[in-house]
Length: 456
Ligand SMILES: *Cc1c(COP(=O)(O)O)cnc(C)c1O
Image 1 (cartoon, rainbow, N blue to C red):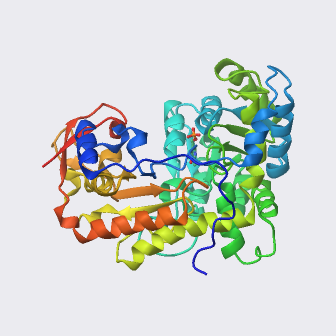
Image 2 (tube, rainbow, N blue to C red):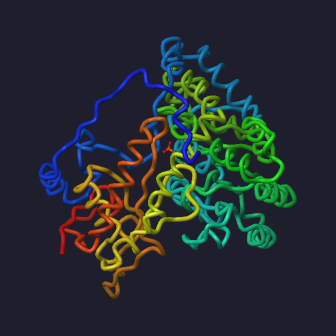
Image 3 (tube, rainbow, N blue to C red):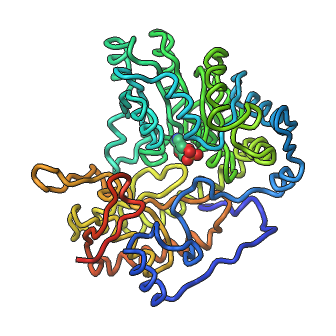
């Protein structure tokens, strides 16, 4: 069967609104053609992000009711701590309200001028937290990750030869090596256990701490289960425990694979480092047994961590994302291959091959997709990462112009995915009518969130 049916049934529903095309044209005008500025209640299928947008289970909702809101020593914290220890094996567990706070605590402690953090690829908040603390964020992805058409396995891997060369040359200035699983910035591509083992070995050899940015560890473990020799007979939690066993610590945005709307943590072996982070935690988040979360949120994470590792769920989850990708591929639409764990990335350069990079083909496609079908995706291209060269005034853009369709967990049905695919296929037929854009307003930093544009 091409698509396993949802391994759940629906107990609570949330109405979504179908707007008319005229309404959407009007809303887009008011939003300066930027879908970040469209109110969510005017969106039919919202694929802006998979972060914090998942549906909790009946067990998680029940968990909210037994959340213990004691300021110190809450029952819910101990449940949370034992779940994180059980999965990761790390003894020191620090709750945070989301992933980037864990990054802030960690990198403000270990980074300084002249230091370099190495990763397969830093996620954007990770990079920002490293750079804010005056260190360099060095990405060492395998070269296969640069070619979107290459359907090869393990495109999330780190280039171990380059890692070894850097450690050999500059070990004293590398306070940490990070493996992001799955590799979000290269398209949710998985990292193989072999690569994690190899990176870990090098880190041990050179005495550098090795951490996992594990927002999507369960999806990554599912790929290992399915695709890496020797893992078919293992459960996801066994694979996860092996993965974490190679590291000295990890941090997680629980808004992804722990199936909650808010939450995160950092966990590690180093008790001294954990103490330092806890001191900072008290300053910026709260007491070490709640860390910026309510007791009920801790309950929901403790339950969601295990639900996110259920094989039936992961099979459905990854198949749903792949289903959308394959429908687009079947219609001759170019996407990043292979389809990763949490999103489908459309090649906007190919889709809008009549629009030059400086006229934002990805934004043009995102805007057309909302206008024609009420679907919200996000541009990952020249608006997000490009700029004008101050000397020449010429546009400097990233290597790829992509539109990401991130799939929230347990939220949309197969019928929704079919609707999205068919709408995109329809739009593809008249794609040459999509117009390029120019900026009418841009903020000095992170301009894609608030930019306003008009058609040229
Ligand atoms: C989302 C994410 C983060 C940041 O977490 P937030 O919960 O959004 O603060 C860090 N790393 C990766 C890989 C992520 O996907």
